[in-house]
Length: 251
Image 1: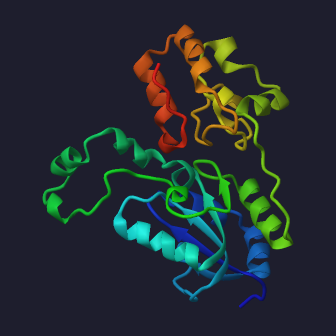
Image 2: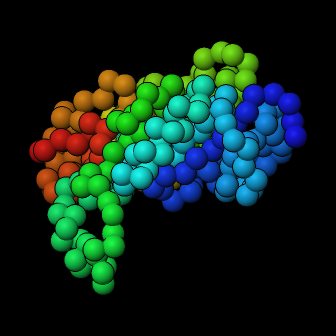
């Protein structure tokens, strides 16, 4: 087993995409594995070493009382806790049920709903325990994930963007899809980090990195209306990935 700080990766309600991003680091992951002791990472290995852990990466949101208790245990066993991805930082798409009747869903979807134990609301990790660092995205990007791990191992603060996707579009030389093509786009209010992936392919930003530090969705609404988006569609756009993250406005 490698010497160095211990690393644990935890899953809560999520699709595993952010953990797969870590596995997709391939050769870089081998360097990470050589610098840390991977003590718990069930996506990669069934071997588990008991804590405490120097670094915990947490994917997913909280949907049950059992998970609420488990994240408190993870926090207590972790020196540094980093939430990774839209589910962990902003609720994720599963938090859309916060706007619905959970009891009605249970009666429709499950043959025996009495066996389902779930909270009324889906919440991000920071609603339950202190979080040392949040890494946005659905999923997180390989470059940012490696930057965070390298920074933590070096004892420095990670260098992460705090601006909007619009700034990434400008640096990439992309024409504004909202202005030039009338395509609904959340770039003005969305946290940078994806490299303006969707606008680079003439698609509007879907907001999967959540609202940036000074996002003001309100002024964006008239622009979205001007390109033909209905108010229900605008609400859907703003709710998708980061429902719990303050990005929802009512037109």
